[in-house]
Amino acid sequence: MKRALIALAAGLAVSVLALAAALAVVVAAPDRLKPLVVALVARDGRQSITLDGPISLSLLPHPVLRAETVTLATRAGRIEAGQFLAHLALRPLLSRQIVVTRLDLDHAVFHPAPQEAISNAVPETVSQAAPASIAAASAPAPAGKPRHWRISLLALRLTDARVATAAPLSIIRLDLPALPGPSATAITLDARYAGIPFSLSGMIARLPGDALSFGGLRVVAQQGDVALDGTLHLAPHPAFAGKATIHRLDLDALRHALPRHALAPAAAAGEAPAPSAAPPPDWRDRPLAFLPLLDAADLDLAVAAGTVIESGAAYRDIAAHLVLHERHLVLDPLRLEVPGGAVSGVLSLDAAATPPAMTLHLLAPSLALGPLAGAFHWPDENTGALEIFADLSAAGATPRALMASLGGRVGIAAVNATLANRLLLRALGEIVRQARLPPIGLESGGHTDLRCLALGGEIAGGVVHLDPALAETSRLMLGAGGTLDLGAATLAVRLVPSLRIGGNALVVPLRLDGPLAAPKLMPDPDQGDGALAAVPCESALARARGGRAGPAPAPAKPAKGLSLRDILRELAK
Image 1: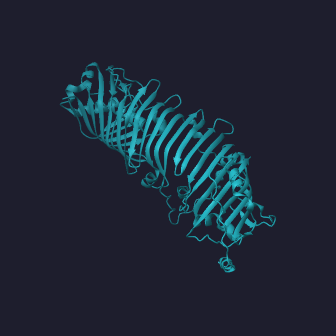
Image 2: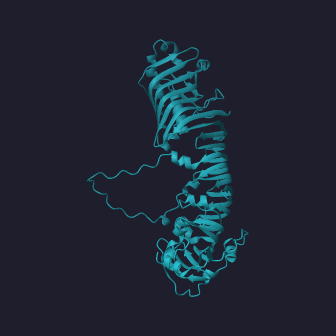
Image 3: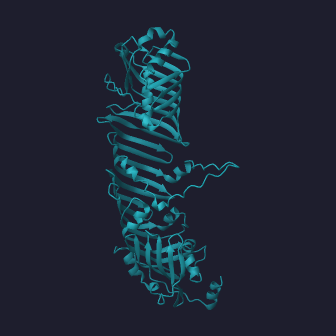
């Protein structure tokens, strides 16, 4: 948008080319300026101007051209201004140079042109007369007068303007150099986007080789405060190298303030339904949408964030380094403090490989269960921490290809936690019902102590081979083992829920088979011994943690004896 505004501003500046040729005449009769300005602006065919309102010229204390109800059309788009003022430097007029020290546009509406037209909208001739000038154009005089004038635009000011696009952006005030010069210049913006007021300020300069330098470019709003420093190279291939500093960013507040996407309008009454089209392809077979984006530019960005709020949780001390070069993206390192501990990771994505290759190393030794459950809109009345690690690699251009080639190892563990029964019933309710076990101690309004959770496995060719897994509460133990075929989207898992009753246990082996979207749970008579329910917590944790050290589970509490009446009452529910 900035470049388009610059091109439009440069085009507007061309409209004052007629001033120097007829100053003495037009001060007394300013309407004579109109046909001259219109003719000269349209001379090179790049733009046209319409002057529907009055026009005037004053000379003291410096020349100022004022016009009302102006429409300028260029390849960059169309801008309609209720009023514009061109402040002119007087001395350059003596050498046929028009220097617009500042162009003010008030009550302006900008209608952008398609992107392919914008690149041709900036005048090609750059003024060398004044080092601070940042746009220049030469326009020939009318036929028979082969005298050329040169125009330079030093600065642009917009007030009470808006951009007529789908983005609801209104500009309260914008001050910027039309195109940056070799010396750093200040840029300031006060605007509203979707009703959210924000400000932008900083320094910008133009460097050799079609590059721009940003210094302390800072965006401040009620929802966040973000700064950017670095260098942007525009050609031949866009590239940015620099640092982003996030002082604070409240994503929850930002989502709440932004408008929701409008729903598609319903078909009018009596309107014939559209002919049925071919069903869309399965999402797993669609090309990964982000792969083409990796060819758009090169990037070397260091990110430092103080506080980022997401789903009610505060994430602090974020440090990341993102490098994208020749379609190869590397995120290394990635470190952040989450509620309950630290997360670190390394991501590599090589989109230039055939097929695209990805690797991920992730370690989160202590994720607080409450905020984590809240982020997924699950019951969040939980205490304790979850340990997660992953060491994965895959190759493919679609989600299905990635899943079918996945390899590596993952592990999840937790000890000495307290979970809301509503969350446990969501995860284990169907298993308990199919096993015909009484849900003793799982009342929907209470909590349950989770002594041990251990889940891990090796992955090869998209197939997850589960280690003997275990979930142990004060009443219920659940052992599991088997495979998940991510490529075929199927699973074959053995489950052994075991309910403690006094010094004994009621064991009901089950199988979970079929497609991942709708697996079937059924009794499994082949597991007569229920060995999976007897896996020691310590050994299961060691496998799930991949040999890493971690907190030990509390000693198992002896199960309380249950009377026959208690058991029958629970079974009858």
